[in-house]
Length: 493
Image 1 (cartoon, rainbow, N blue to C red):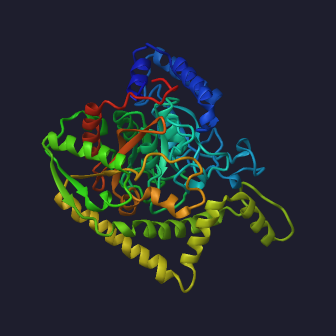
Image 2 (image 1 turned 90 degrees about the vertical axis):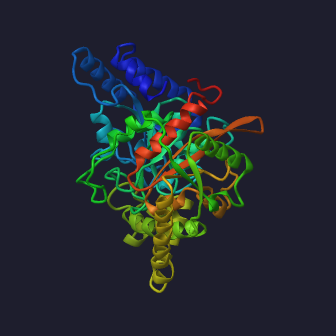
Image 3 (image 1 turned 45 degrees about the vertical axis):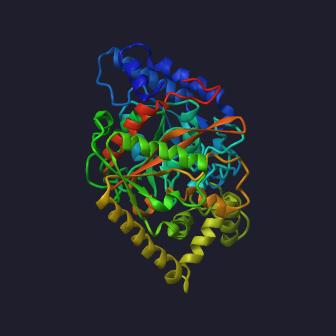
């Protein structure tokens, strides 16, 4: 069932919230080998379901997501469940998730889901501190792709994407810094939305790179993503970067007819390195829009090639600053051993994983005296050029169509020893993050590889705060392609 099915079944009384929750909890247990969920909130979810059943029977007003089970990425603070960002440094014993930090508050997006009567099923696995493209950097083990258990689900929101793909939940929250919603959505065959920077509050999101991080939904269909985004978007006085504007009518945008569009195809996104199966699937989507009256326009984003290096200077510099607070003194892992310097060194040395340490060191170097101007400042200047590329493109076209990832899901362990190849997995998602525009990935098709059917995602990009445009175009393709109902073998609809 998708998000609307859960809503309708509960509102119409066909199924109780308790029955819906029990079904999701059973699916979570069956899908445990995926390692998609780090924590399942069995008691809290059932207690909330009982309250919702009583509320409906009493004729009370029901929220926009009443009866919809949702998983929450472990980077988002939750009052009733641990929050560790999949890192040992946010556990007391440096080993087990159960000893994880318990926040004294909910993230704004979590509070809004609760207020909308959603049922929070548990916390989703992720790359540690959202640093990764394969969900192999989690301190609590990698997530497996439901379509092929030998392959990565993508990252860093791999647990959220895998949980949705396996039909454990119809929706989940993730965070996207450089593609961490869109890339796993592509690899797992689900819908993932990175809202425009400032559209959704970041309050309560454990920061990786503050000028890039954005919270968004991963869902089994486009309509579900629209429903979740309507609830979590909007102004928040607790986040100074959140735009003072209400959410758009994204559900209605999914239902309107496709207008006559000018669709841009960036030349740089179809160059060397793009897998042929991905190219063919994305070209099919472009042909779909052409056949429905869209004008297809070739556009150039000339600074695309600088996206990876620019991102990995800015993001690591911000990570170096943000993660300095995890020092073994105030919360989380504390390794007592002599003086204060030893406390810092051993707590951070044991608490952080290899990828997080790598990025902290890269960022610290980029910000250090004598190198700031050569690296960080220059990266910010190139970021401006990348944003201007998109600004010019959107004077010519309404939206852009690109691949979400250069390849289908790759094998677990395939790129772990080659950080550069891992970083290149986000080559098509990083530029939009640097520009702060909105993006959406949804299934474009499937390719058979070594006996497994693997999803391929297509990415739609639109200007700042033009999410409605994305939802209209995405929903039109989804209705025609009829891919949203497909589930991995062994994980029923």
